[in-house]
Amino acid sequence: MTVTVVADVLGKENNGTTIACLNLIRYLRSQGDTVRILCADEDKRGQEGAYIAPTLDLGFALNKVLEKNEVVVARNDPAVVAAALEGTDECHVMTPFFLGHAAVIECRRRGIPVTAGFHCQAENFTSHIFMLNSGFANREFYNFVWAHFYRYVDLIHYPSQFIRDTFEQSIGCRTPGVVVSNGVGDIYRRRPSEKPEWLKDKYVILFTGRLSREKSHMVLVKAVKYSRYRDRIQLMFAGCGPREGQIMRCVRRCGITPPLIKFYSREELVDLINYSDLYCHPAEIEIEAISCLEAISCGLVPVISDSPRSATKAFALDENNLFSCNDPRDLARKIDFWIEHPELKAEYSRRYEGFTKQFDQTECMRKTRQILVDAYEKANENDLVFRPA
Image 1 (tube, helix red, strand yellow):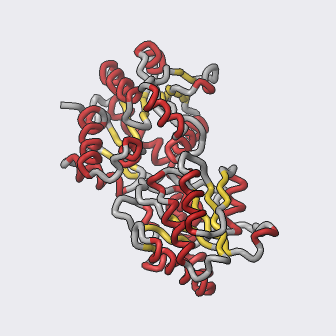
Image 2 (cartoon, rainbow, N blue to C red; image 1 turned 45 degrees about the vertical axis):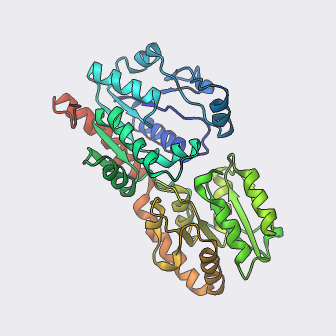
Image 3 (cartoon, rainbow, N blue to C red; image 1 turned 180 degrees about the vertical axis):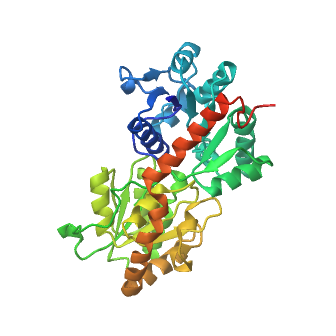
């Protein structure tokens, strides 16, 4: 097939949506498909199959917010969109924004089958306009993207049952969708990895994720403050983002050992996971949390927020792997429990290694490609899965 992948927000490979997009592109090409990329990233200009749309100017204030969050948003350019779709067999859109919307409408006009990923939780948007906890704003986001985007696509790729249920409950109807994880790469496996000398006497607690508000880093910082073993604990935050300053101010107020905050390559991250002692995932908002799956694939035992707005809690084997959302004292109790029960932690580590076999990335990418193939084949049979009213 010739597939056009549309990414309103692509950028660096430092967030879940971009990683999922690039993994899909790489897999499609490995299967012999011709892949075009429609995005706004100037660094892709000149690359084979890349079609570059202009960026969206939202005014000085909003541009600064986007810049702070390392986000570049694409703007519709009908000529670029038309060129990217000319002669394509299938179009897959990553997010329901301006460029993706334009591509879907053009696909409908041309009769091109179109699928879409569901990689943007409402709170990922409302957090940027300071309405993270507004139930009304979050419901309106889902109603808007259904009315103006998802109702026009043939199949929706949901990375988790959680986000499918959340979306369908918000809009009040069933959608044409398939649930397939974004998957965990083969590199994330248990392997020998020694702690650096300066960490030999430390209990290393890892959290991997973008430094953004909804990831709730401060909950983990405060939990260390309340731990009986606070002087032994070394936090490691593997990621980058706009909240580093706020995190460090919270660290100083709590009087704990400063965390090491750094963006790691894949190889470095696998080593870090394998010499860490515990993985804590305090995020309140999460569609799937591949970062948590990567950690437990290496046998690292997790403690996860039981947030009703997060899919990650499904990865808990029992109550010892969960803590009450946004409750640092409860998280501290769970951290202390695992520090005090090393033999039980070793048993859970072995159990978690087997748990993640269902998230094998190659198999997940195969299933995701099948979503595109199904839409393409049904279009050729003049029996598209879903047509707008």
